[in-house]
Length: 236
Image 1 (cartoon, rainbow, N blue to C red):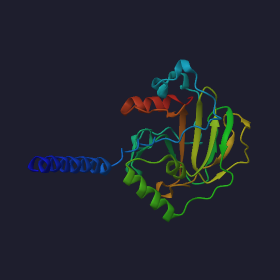
Image 2 (spheres, helix red, strand yellow):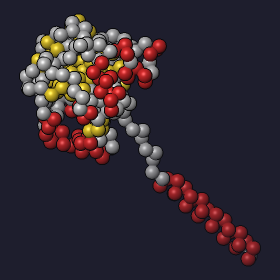
Image 3 (cartoon, helix red, strand yellow):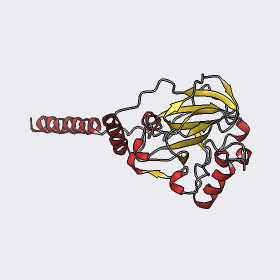
Image 4 (cartoon, rainbow, N blue to C red):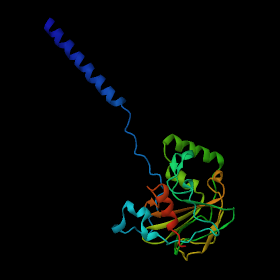
């Protein structure tokens, strides 16, 4: 009887250990989801980046030097690092992906190069201050700016496809011209006006991005190399 009782006791302790181990496995927190990208992806309708140059060096590729005209009249290319790609944007736990051209509200904005209209926010409703504050708070909690939030921060926009995977974006516009997706336009064509839509706290300016595939021009550069690379984008 003593032997049987001992065997039963060992079996009981073994079952309890297995149950406790299973409970610990169930209690483990799920694996964290991968961080979302910090950029707004180019729509599938944009022209494809050639495989031959589809690497990160294209961020400041010489093939883009002198390809664009400054999209705002009587405004020079800024050299303040805070207005250039890669600058921190702590208010949304993100980074800046374009070049900011400060200008008075209503200043005309022009296409920087020949291309095809990819997006035009003709019907645009800006978010409320409450919606903005909630979205920015969520971004801070996440530690990055979700793509949808970043798109709202850019406000009213026009995107132009220049071929070869190169797209320019014009953001924070106060108004846009009568354009249509798929319409061909020439460099210098009036496309909108400077504003502060999406993020009025930033004051009136044109946020101008050069996108190459799913990356932004200037990504990974800093200091004088970044300033030179941004200046070289524009014909003198």
